[in-house]
Length: 175
Image (tube, rainbow, N blue to C red; front, side, top):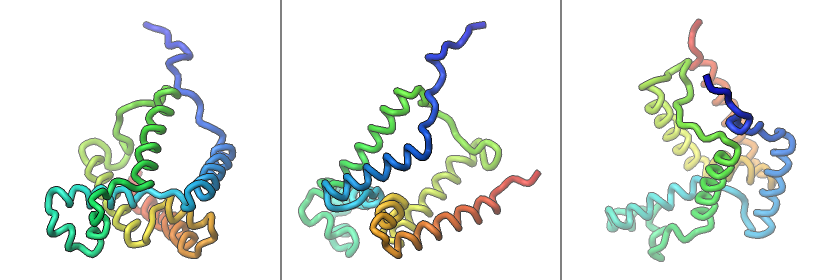
């Protein structure tokens, strides 16, 4: 039997208060440096426009929603693309350095196993659809909107959390 060293243990999570303060500093710096807040769902829309530009250019260009993004021919040339790529790379580097990289399917108690990828995909699609209807995601509308005291930001976050709490009540496994 091998002994595990302290090097194999994951690093502890940051203090939530410190992490929240640092997130606020990052959000403030983003507003000051770029003139806009954080967001992510615009990237998936731009990625869809980029794919559409190659797969169905006529239909994509005729689409009122996606067409404007491909007019210049470079829908991925936007700040949001680089922000999302930076967040993904930063998260992977951070997880690696904290020894927290693991490939697993969460949610084993309820809808685990083979059902989990489908329920996660369905939930992700619903969240993405809701973010597009609300004109922003939890980071764009929630964090950035609330930071500028936007009524839409407060409404979105309140609704997002309320629906999340209600859904978790309905989805709990019966004992």
